Length: 195
Length: 195
Image (cartoon, rainbow over all chains, first blue to last red):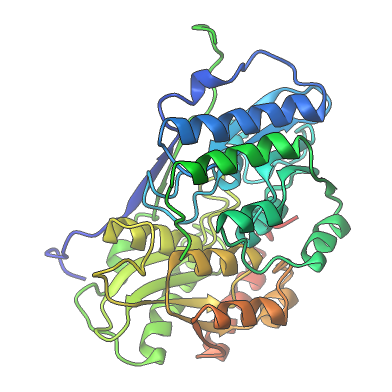
């Protein structure tokens, strides 16, 4: 409208914290759910230890080969962006890696999302749209709620919706280990950023 | 782990299409819900006409002053990112503009999200985490579903959850005008990108 338009934000760059790339082994083939969950939990733990965000980590793998495709950590406070839960970051970067807006595109192998804690309402929706075929969760909604994090409008029917869409859901993988990171975060009085 | 790590995506930059910044009047004070909805609908329509994405637009305003803070258009296909629904883009850019991970931060005025179509499950969660105090919707879930877009696990209880969190919800503002853009998209055989 006007060449003198006041400055306003017109882009955001979403990048991992500097430590993250080298915190995982990109060459390894991850076989078991425990192996994969250890990646997500390690990311969640280092995110707390380095003060780069909330106690949540996630990773996207190729089903079958166990190849790591993308990783994410909670980046809400670090990047001033409430949508940047670990799952959203991991899915975004996996889709960038695949040059595709869906991980279920023709020619791609199937993918799975492994997250250190059961997804909130937003992330459950993001999981559905990403095209992953499998969702593996560590800590439970109750574990997160006990820490003070709100998971939002997630209902048993929400999980049924994903299952009906063909997504296999596996819960409580390495739950105690994942929950320990939530407890570490609480013990350090990390910010509970959801209002 | 290894200096010879294969290249993989480690960031994504989310920017509006080139036409978007100048498609809205950043100086105006938007007063009525219809005025605000016309911004969201115009963005949705131009997004279709320019072939830059799906038929959805959104905008974040300051409540009270009616000042425009951030805008978004569906950018899923353009940016290879399934999470980039119009609402998520608008909320991300509004938070960047405010330098805050919550639009409910102390010292900020209250904000509202105006969207050309009722949010999907992911965007409803994103709305909750953003800290907006008001959600204004144009076309309905049924309008989107009729076009072939899946809204995901959204239930009446999902809206009740947001209302209970203090978010005022207003629906069917300029619904016919908003729905016309969905129909335009269908008539042009635009991709229905949700699986």
